[in-house]
Amino acid sequence: MFWWEFLKEGPPLGEPFDAPDYPYLDWARDHRAGSRHGAVADVLYPLTWEAQASQADYRGMEAVSSLYSNARVSVPHSWHSAEMFLYLLPVK
Image (cartoon, rainbow, N blue to C red):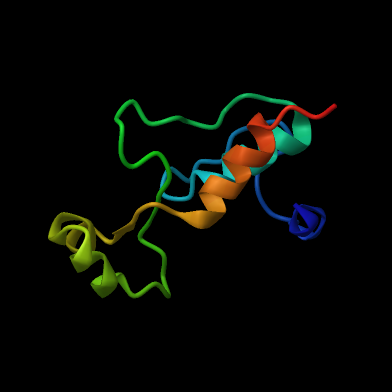
């Protein structure tokens, strides 16, 4: 989360983002602030995603499902997965 210190836009620390297409932002904010706004999917797959990214090429999602490429959704999403893992990882 080294990038978080450089983020100047968005709600105050601990408040959720209004960006449902970028769920990793809420997970990162939760990890940084100790809050709990990050959503967890209620289906087996996909647990992580990003949608409608301006520079993403969704044609590769055809290999998984044309539904994802047509909806401009990338699943699973590594950044989202990493933020969930860092938040849920018990620190000793």
